[in-house]
Length: 460
Image (cartoon, rainbow, N blue to C red):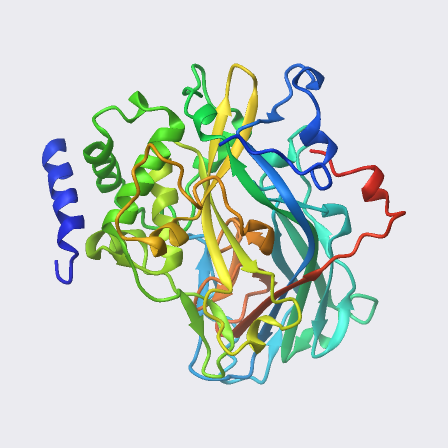
């Protein structure tokens, strides 16, 4: 191995050898379901816990735009089949020899996140459109269903879907041909600062039985968390051995909250962030995410900001903690679009949320851990017995609109060259080449005095 970080490798070598402050929700913004007394919880229903609270809510509309073009803006872009194992007809149309896309049916999807530690989306107000060569063909998305009875705080992401086909009717594309396809999705949401009651959280033990099924679902293998884009699993033994070296032979000897902080401290200590993780076209447009992969990060001790959050998510899951990655966009510069700023660095953000499940009271909290911001403060972790800025308590999350919890939708769809959060299904076969460009921004969502959201805040 070459170009390794000595301290990180020393820790891994040692591990491999061993294996051979209560926050108060702002009354103006906190929804009613966050302020209800504990005895109001219905028996058997998983409730939001008291360990992470929200305040200083801000209303945003997250706008995500995807353009898929047959006209090359730069170097060629081949199809990226994710999730791994998706079969693709290698005789599919090549835009190198044809002037556009031909299809019989086409469905384009984009994620819509459920409730997170710091955000509540208005899923009933999601809007968007699909265009072909500048003409609107699908005026609104259809959202995939959420299983009944699943609280929003533990629900899986939904997909905004736009479907079209060859034809001459409304929503159809004449002759099934287009040079360029565009999709836009707008998701209204309220984003909050978070406050973490760490002393109380440290007293929450591991569940005696098991995690709730909806929480346990996050352990399902995920691209860039458990597997690479080729479908090959990352080296879980290295992760588990590193955890053993850092936290002892039985990680569950520590409470979940303490274990999460111990692991975060070691990631801060041994991983050097490098690069912004953005892949761009020759035009400068954002193409998607450039990820080195967890195996490479472990081997070199270096990775992009997005690799850093992928690694921490993987470590948490390997230690038995349900965890998910959150990808978002900074929203404070609301008057300037994402790609119009002089510097796009830092606009796209990612962090980790781990689940804190209080089995005795049947409550759940997702605890945000902004490992990138923690690492930027210092390469030496603070004492774990003290509160950390950006661990649980985060003053900036009301200015960051969450977009997704996967770099690629968790379904059988195709993207190009690098993951870009979106994907499509095309028959009879997807184009073998295309050029994707992305943009994100968020603008303020005003609520009028007679808006029903004032009288009926969203419930899980």
